Amino acid sequence: MNPSSDVTRRRALVGAAGVTAAVSLTSGGFLATPAAAAGPAATPGAPAPTGPAPEPFRGDHLKEALREAEARRRRIHTGRASANGWEMQKLADADGGDIATRSVPGTGLRVAVRTGDVEAVLVHVVRRFHYEVDALGQDGEPHALVGWVAPGTVRDSRLPESNQASGTAVVIRPGSYPPGVRGGFTARQQEVVRDILADTEGLVRWGGDDDRPYEGLFHLAVRPGDDRLQRVADRLRAWDETPGLGAGTLPDVTEPSRRRRAARYR
Image (cartoon, rainbow, N blue to C red):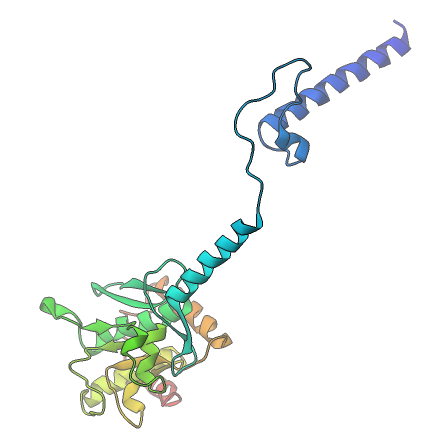
């Protein structure tokens, strides 16, 4: 056999295989080039493809999209901060908002809070309260737990309870622990509350420690962007996934090392 003919034949076979592979990739959507996206070239003499031509992009489309986005923003956001610096929002469970109703595992309760790290921290507080201080929502108890409230109900955005409107606070039994009144908890219950606050490294403040007490209130005490929040939230989430840790383990809060830890966050 003529060697030059054999080389020519191999080149032809390789070229044919390459074309076949390229066509397969294109038809399967693996090539993202403009030529592949456009599909196979038209056969000379074949009728032109039918169907509506793509509508050209116009500037008024962009303007309409911007108007819709602004309308959504105004429907949800206030541009005003609660006492801890987080933005108050007009709605919960709204598309594009940051506040949603969440289940509190193990309690049968639901509460509207700011999702993400704030949610992880506040839900941990509620769960431990339920397990170790006093069970909430038993026998159909109404209004055992309240989270987000509409900004229009906030009397003074400088007060800690305004943090509810930003989804960064919860109130336990608002009818039982009214603002301005102390003495709603026994010494033992307060000891547990101190231990719960220590779990959050002081990122959550108890309203009973304020000059104007509100013993049912637990609110986030850090501003947006504080790096400690994610770190603490990640630790609490890890506890929930580890047997023997997290809410529901019923630790001995009188143990000296735990009492020393709790004392740091008074």
